[in-house]
Image 1 (spheres, helix red, strand yellow):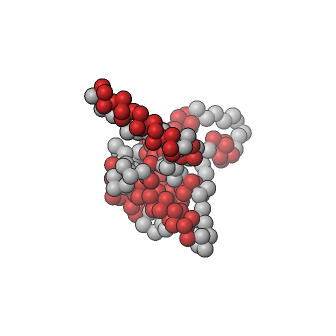
Image 2 (tube, one colour; image 1 turned 180 degrees about the horizontal axis):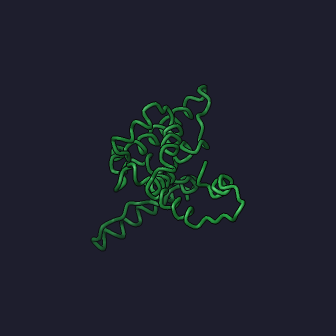
Image 3 (cartoon, helix red, strand yellow; image 1 turned 135 degrees about the horizontal axis):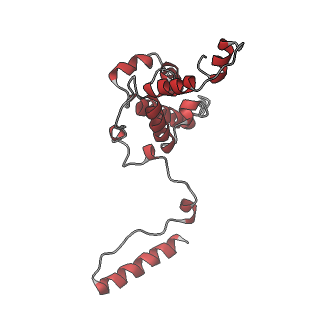
Length: 181
């Protein structure tokens, strides 16, 4: 649809509405090239900027809630299209590409802000030396993955259901179950 057709469509809607005394919806159909473009991730939308503080989870990461926090945080990072900064699939572009590098740096900072904004104060010791979002995520993962209360319950359940027969090497059995890393 051309710009001229859009203008004519709006003009017709306005003239028809003048006769009925109803509110006019001035939203016009987007141009064809705009329709094919995907919407920007939430952190790039104007209603999000300045409201990063509202992207807080009900329960920030503490020493007891790693499994639940990790699931919620992963979802939040994916929705905002920045998860790749944590798993290493979004890497910085060459510095000689200033526009691409600036865009990457912004998404990197948003990722770090989303993570750090959802931690209890005692958790900052684990990310204090991290420079990248991936380092932050990896540090938190290494500290919490086998320490959380939920992880302990899973390990207990696994241990209670582990069977060995006479002559089995107990060390080998525990390694097979994942109880020892």
